[in-house]
Length: 350
Image 1: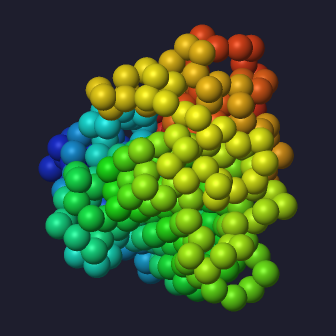
Image 2: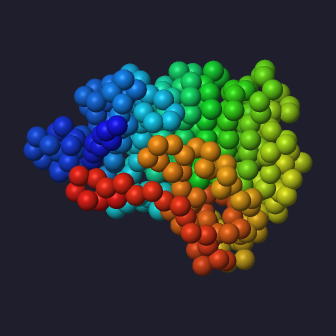
Image 3: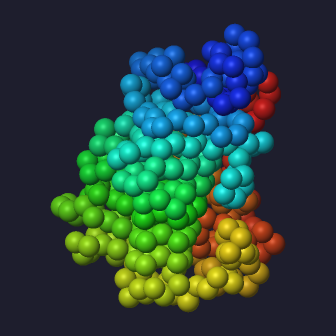
């Protein structure tokens, strides 16, 4: 099995993506569209997996859909992630950003199974009816969105929208800010939302899909400043057996799913809510209040990829996990994360 590695940088003049250089034949791709047009293939029959490493600043593309590949969940998957030097660190505007004004669709849409989206900042600037990340019905297998910052610039947009008909999905360790809805699931398949921080959205996490016996499993999430932090308009669509350890500021504490919930979150639980810093303050009610989800994260491991038990800024989770996307640095004893290292063509860790 080959591991195909390509690079993307919006500052590049555009090359074949085989290096992270900014000029020349082998320069990084300059857009997602150019990368997919050149690279989309049948990873299953090729026996490969494909990683796109994003570097640099802001890339503007008004709607990009991952499609045209043949992938699977276990070995022949597609991973898009941000290189260490270009990561946002859990800060809005802090790193590589995909920005777009997409009407009634996603700034980034996924119509494939076996896709891992890791560490991007995505901003939707369209006036209404749009999504930051949209999971389309063609994504019939596992899709993971992790360690992303998703905002909508104050417009009426959904952070992550999981369409009816899509299959297994995990959103974990994401910060979603200033959207009409943080995470919306229109499905009844196996889906999980773990350790997300959702701030100042009209709706935090909602489940609207009907049918089936499988419910949305929500654990270790915090919804703060949301009119409806957790919503299930059709009733009983959260997994009441597994959902636990979620938090809110009490906007509607009666519908926080699962036990061991924190319903008294205040702005002082964050380092600087007014300054858009939602890392945890010392003594935060969210510190050491979460469930240990090591087993649940390891269920998404696959050949050549371990879903790291780290927060949105790659800080290791403590022995007792915090609630939300941020693990308080300086807080209790931390666990030693299991991490598998791969070397790129220049010796860098992937």
